[in-house]
Length: 380
Ligand code: SAH
Ligand code: SF4
Image 1 (cartoon, rainbow, N blue to C red):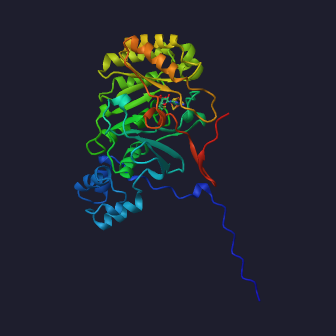
Image 2 (cartoon, rainbow, N blue to C red):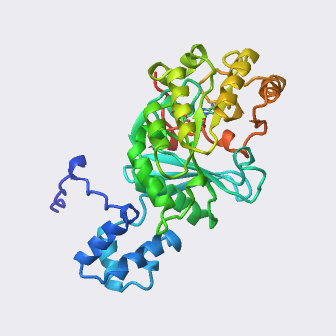
Image 3 (tube, rainbow, N blue to C red):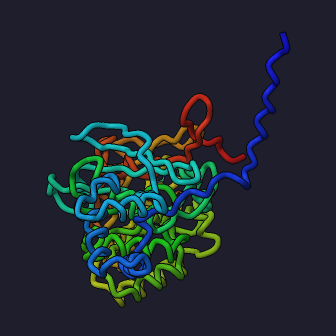
């Protein structure tokens, strides 16, 4: 019997030949969508219909856009995917903090955290939901206490990948997000142009229609972008990750301070105050023996008073692979009391898990392996 002809071995996959991923429909703004649909010979009102299905009705498929002709749905489906990111996993339950893991088109991952309430930033309204959004995959700024900085920087997120985190969190939870904080993975100001484009989608009437006052950008202290946002017409809030009241302390834990020191930073914050009515928030992680001396609290109080800023004290959250220690509760309270006694509005979040401070700043680069999704190895 003649042996069956051996089939030719499969050629090794050529990464250059990988079919390009279709662009995300959520990446098109009204002008781009109108132009596209007009070029397909569609009537002008179609763009508005598509945008409404995406951002208002928040459907999960093109199929569900029932007032579009079937042929148009097929054509859109052939050329676009709906979302810029795909839901991979949810951790946590509806009444607590939920962490969503999203897979990006290139196989990388980002996380967003949905927090039921954030009294520290927005008063005691417990029915408010805050979403903590990532702006980059990883972070290049390498703060010594931060999980996101550990594995280094992969890439900037595109506007549709930033706004898409909000869209998917709302679609998956079936709840509206009331407040947004850019405190997830990455340094938002290092991705300024795309961040502002995402904010345009998030605040637009045709988009997610969230008020700019409900958005807070957190930065480790990128001075030029602080000044740029101060000049921006929208009333977006600003939080500064200060974590040290002097250059000596900041230099030790935040490499960014060697580029823009505290004098540069406070200069930019004075400029912010000269342009904006919203009060600044100073975030301050308490790390034992590093920045928790009561003398630091006194200096911090001086800065906060002059800047009319409130201070958000965050006891350090343990990060695997780092040996910093959270101070005792007594020390955290004593630090806060120095601020309060100086007339500064200061909050201290001691409970874990439910608040934004425990959930954000804890996001780490993820990668897919045969064992599943794991944290990326730390940088040497
Ligand atoms: N890059 C921006 C936003 C992301 S970090 C920034 O640095 O502000 C979001 C917040 O989490 C920052 O205030 C950051 O300092 C804080 N954070 C990082 N690591 C933390 C940790 N181990 N414990 C508590 N907060 C942490
Ligand atoms: Fe980057 Fe912010 Fe983490 Fe610093 S604290 S490494 S800037 S994400």
